[in-house]
Each structure stands twice: as structure tokens, then as C-alpha cells.
Image 1 (cartoon, rainbow, N blue to C red):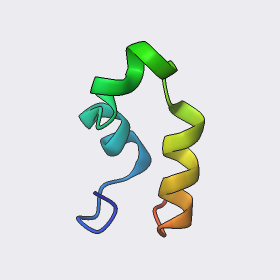
Image 2: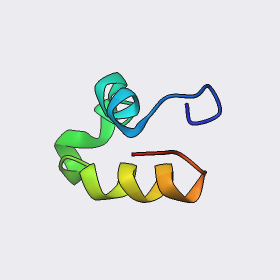
Image 3: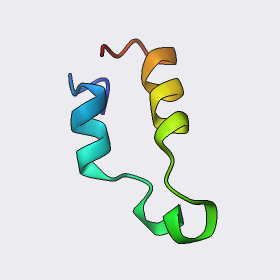
Length: 42
């Protein structure tokens, strides 16, 4: 998603971890860390 030019907000809105949210909770910190690591912008 970062490769497609999506910002953190766009990635978060797409909810790519939806299948895991009930088990692990909402992944705000995880998504931010991955976005930054892959070169995304805030």
C-alpha cells in the first residue's frame, strides 16, 4: 500500500488487518511503524 502511494491515513482507512483486529486489537502502532519503515509519509 505504501508502494501505491497511500499515506498512513489511507492505509488505516483500508483496514488491512481487519481479520486480526478482534484477536490482537486495533493495530495503530503497528501500521504506523510499518508505514514509516517502508518509506511512507505522515
